[in-house]
Structure formats: structure tokens, C-alpha cells
Amino acid sequence: MEREIHQPVDMCLKNGRLNEAAVGWSRFPMHKANLKGWGRRKRFDYWCVVSPEMILAFSISDTDYKAATSMFFLDRTTQTETTASSMDWFRSNPTSRAR
Image (cartoon, rainbow, N blue to C red; front, side, top):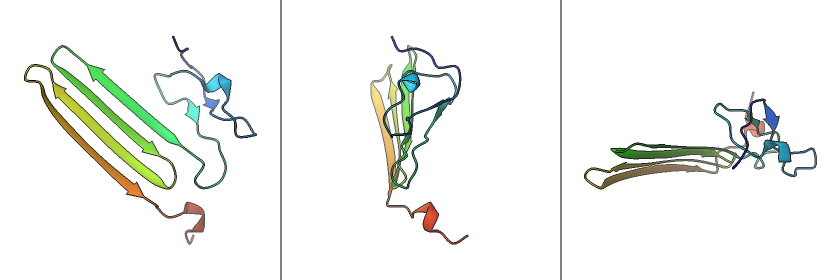
């Protein structure tokens, strides 16, 4: 079982490797995406809610050059499912924007 993280933690060490202290889950956002440079940061949230009547899952991700969202809903009574997703590729580099 993964450990619960209660305090803010950097995702990566200074050399860009995974910070072992960041391995786990949290009830609130505690992970800081601390990689420097455009195209290196990866932020991802996934949520899944399950009940006897339905299942709802959704994710939101941002990797600097691509943003994506997805949603899945299953009505467990009728076995009807609904999905939706979107993707935004090659967004502009925020450091190159005029200030």
C-alpha cells in the first residue's frame, strides 16, 4: 500500500530524478512539479468515484506542450457508459510570450 503524503514535497531531486519522498498519494495537492525548463514539467490528476449506482473517473494532465482531459461515466444499473476527452497540443512556450 502506498503511503499518504501530508506535507508539500518536490516531485524531483535537483538532478531531475524522482524524489522517493514524493512516492505516494495525498488527499489534497501536496506534490510540487519542480523541474525547470519548458516541456519537462508533468502534472496529472486522476479521480475515480465508485458507488453501487455509478462509476465516475476523470483525469486532467498538463505536460507543458500538451494538455488533456478525459472523463468516463458508467451507470451501473443500465450498464450505459459515457466518455469524453479533449487534447490541446503544442501550446506556446510561456517563456517566449511577450510580457
